[in-house]
Length: 308
Image 1 (cartoon, one colour):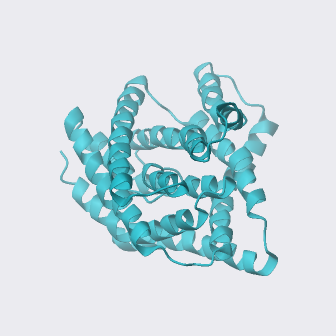
Image 2 (cartoon, rainbow, N blue to C red):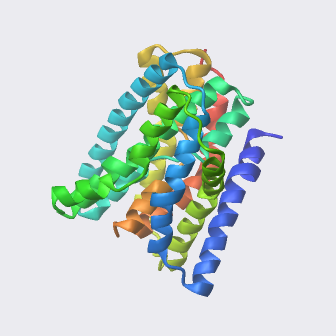
């Protein structure tokens, strides 16, 4: 089976089906998007983050180099999207929405299965992807929320109070501490964590579907396509430049470049919905980038084979 058909059948079509179910459920029952958003922020996201970090095997060397790569990559992508925002003359909530659609990407339920497909279950490349996933979970729940509230001129104290209520910022250090000191999680609690973590992908995709179902669908073609180009084409190209700059080679370089090639994160939609910041644009960016990633990710997978 080719990479194209595998990505289509095992990543994109299942995601699309879940999103379609969310659209239908909204049309029939008028589900409350705010309730779903809060479930994602306060229950499902922290549970899957704790589970994956607690169960992973991360070395300090891999952790340090991957974090350095991520920081450089994030800064470069941030500067590129800021330049685009200024050139396009965006104002208000669209500034944050465009930025989030590019710098926050789907490093969990899309990138992790893809990583294991391409690298045939390699635990080394999986550990790299988990580190990226950790940062891509932490940033939307800190900087992402701060930027949305700052754009609306909220008080700094209120913004910080909002960030400090989010469980994921406590879950990450807790998982590392418990793992580092070999502290076992009581069986009944860990069973509960597993139950909740297993529901993350479905709930996040249903939330996206409910948001799409509630939209008027005035498709913002130029802005959405611009976001897709920055995320799906410029993103992996910058990733390749960063690994070359850092002198990273072999399978680690391949895994890092591929981690940059995935579509826009569901986090951008959850933030947009929770704080009413261009939710229609954000939903369209996530949905369209997931569809177009069939072609762009396949191209990246082919090209990374030439990284030695």
